[in-house]
Length: 196
Image 1 (tube, rainbow, N blue to C red):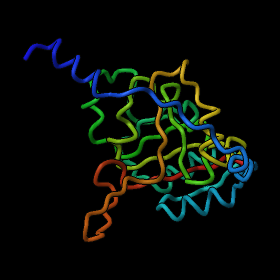
Image 2: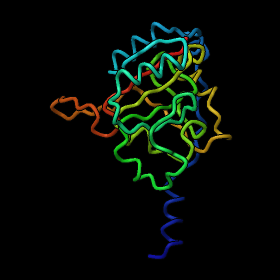
Image 3: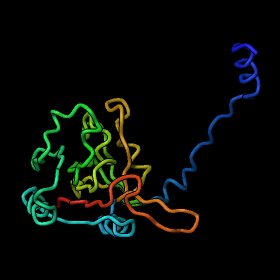
């Protein structure tokens, strides 16, 4: 069977396009319109993330110094919190294997599910960093919270950034026996440092 015959059969089997339904206006109005820091913190606690509140990068640096082993490899994309690994020299993502803590800045956080948004602005060419590091230390300004994913999608710059992701807490997976495993497919721990 030729390629043209196969593609013609696929086109014929697709049927006619159906327009997407309009979003119910009443349902959108019922969504919370205010970001709630207590709700965000409660959700982070529920999904296994640690929350630290502080007023400065100095406090964040102190927390890192007191809670991360002195010999640990730190990779930072936050200029105020330098790491021990020079990311400007890393061209092969495999070289990031062994990173203990990745220090990142989130553009915003979503109260309803505890997710934070990271994109190329924060990650640069190191897209693998939030997945390969053992622990995440994410800086988020309290003023950068949105109440729902609907509000979050209004803030995402799909043109200016070629890559982005929502990240919620440490990596989690479970099997049919309901055995929860933390860190199987990514970071074993996530700390969100909220700058007030």
